[in-house]
Length: 277
Image (cartoon, rainbow, N blue to C red; front, side, top):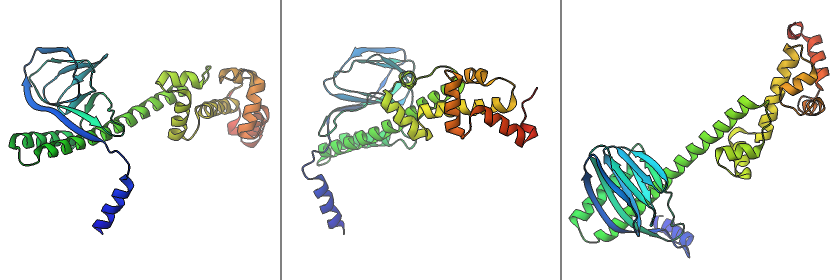
């Protein structure tokens, strides 16, 4: 059975150049508080893991506050610095990636709750110190596992960030549905392209942004028709419709009745629903 699974895996990977990590350097050190390492870059990728300490690091144009259990990823040639507010225990590893999709998301990240990256780095340090047979191959193997853990971690962070952006866009619609809102403006607000934002929003909330906006307006209009004495024209304006003709057309399409019949029918059906004086 095991041989069969192995053969299937080899067939699936036939002709595919797999990602491979090769280590350039690895060390652990404690950097003193109130010290600073100015902007610099490496000819390889670098991972800096913060075991203990506090401070900040600027990666290209972005400044990040680091703490225990966080780590920074820099691509080859990326300028970065480090300012320590406390004694900072770090593990630094330089490496190169080859194969399919050899790029890494840069920035400061938080290790997962069970600290898989920290544990792998500790194993790497032990391998480096003991230097048993094939230790160089083992180091590259462990490093490849770290890259995989980082990519999984970065994907989770990106998903959470995406969800936050989408909730912000929805909240903006909830608060401003009676104003002129376009999908282009919403997409730009949260940093997505028009089509990507529209797809993400519909996937998350079950409606396209325009459909969600229209539903909010129809809900508000229905409430005002039932519980106010405002005219249909005034309600159309209050709910963000261009004019009462557009309002009537869209309201009938969504509810099955034009606004005036909706109001009249509700009044005749339930006295409690009559508009308040």
